[in-house]
Length: 413
Image (tube, rainbow, N blue to C red; front, side, top):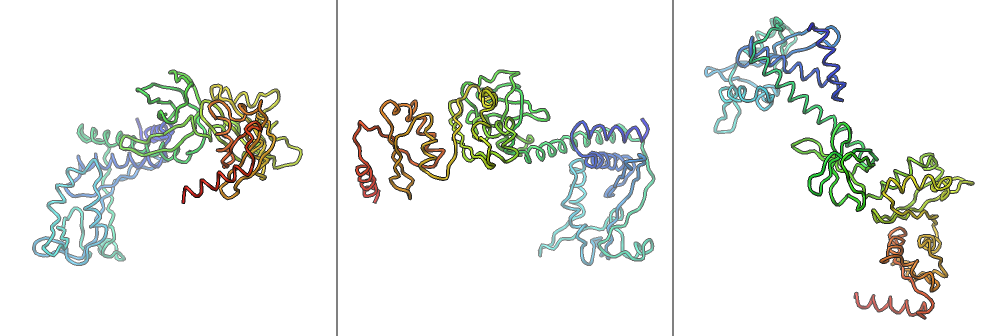
């Protein structure tokens, strides 16, 4: 394979892995530098490789740090350049064991904790010598010397380079995946159930796997291998084993994003979703408001013959959805929120504590409360008000409710 074919192969790898070409080129260059140093370099040398992305030409250079001088014991004198100090703390993984040994030989700390570094002619150059090559150079600068390029490496060097490339590409791929999905937190994503481990469900998202923990699962979804669902990307975490994409089927935002996909009026801004209350897998209440005259917000979400809302219901495995009209008037909003029950009267008991009394007819009482209190519970969550539902036959007057409120306050005091 010639150099141009090699460069083309690198670009193909970058595209397949979904990582930047620059990151792949840097990885290859580090591997080539490590291989060159192993076969042709000397102890302590700082070797850099530069691969031309157009021509495929390989340039090998050696870096020298310019220092002021060294004493009789061979330790650098004068102010230590920052790069010289950093070099002792910056070891590439593929050179770490060997360079750590070198560092032990070169570094010494005095009783006053003064850092002393041995002069190494393969890494350091005296200012006097450096000026012969560049008159403007000064202490702390880097002197770059071009070396003879070699592309034939021994078996051990080639193996080292291969390990470096594999490791760096894995790291770059993980970083690319983490960065991509981190930006998409809160967005909707489609994935296929890959496998299950106990209560954990692993989802194939294409470039990586997502994790659906029990708390974010919905009863009745029946997560079968090969089944496709839509999820909300809850959050993305970085771990020692790579990025973990945590998914949710239970989050209320999933309902919003599903409607956004089906209802163009939400994306255009003519219909606004003001609030959502959800008991995942059972029922959702969603409050909407028209931002433009002549637009029916409820009808927009329902769709012609109920097509839009039915699509969302099917995606949520049959979860019931109540679409109600939002209002900035608490009485009206609460009345709407208790739909499908018909309300006789709504009385605000305490506006500060957001407590309201709702009266319904006898035949509407169980409907207003809902199965196991679900309807009134979701209405309270949607509106942010504490809702008491009473029927006329209980003969409980408004004053009695106020008295109960007063007693509760006394007890709390």
